[in-house]
Length: 183
Ligand SMILES: [Zn+2]
Image 1 (cartoon, rainbow, N blue to C red):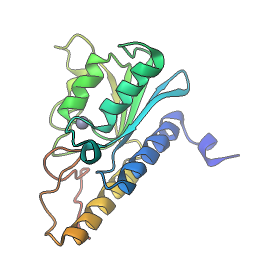
Image 2 (cartoon, helix red, strand yellow):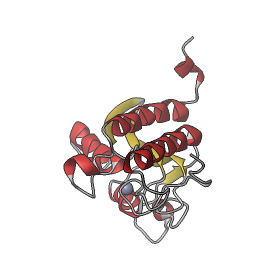
Image 3 (cartoon, rainbow, N blue to C red):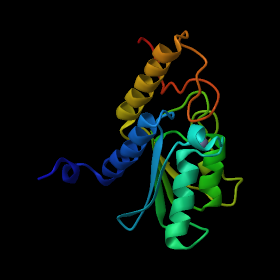
């Protein structure tokens, strides 16, 4: 029996999102990855490409949502779940609502920019015309480890003190409810 078949479905899909995050890491991007799943199939995937595209909106979630809409030939993603390794920022949390996703599952919390629990709760805000069920903390350790490793490496390369680095294209560190330090 393979390891993946032993995991619950949310963890299994999050592993795929983590693989996307690793692709971002290898490309020198802040390592955040996302997949959109519908009916047991991946219909869209994406990883942070802010640097490569020189585009502050090129977050993993936005790219995965666009890819899913293209796959399904629709502008709404009802029946879909988005898995992302880091808590969405306000822009991405808004995109989840506009795309009318059923569910959001995220990994690590983002104390600096999180908009799906931490600073705001946009996906579940009853004032908006759609709400997205949210599950947090799935494979959070693996996601946080990847982010920590990335910023540690970047600090070494830049020779800068451990502060003021961007998380998911947003200002500030992405410390997932505990310090990124020590390195
Ligand atoms: Zn975002």
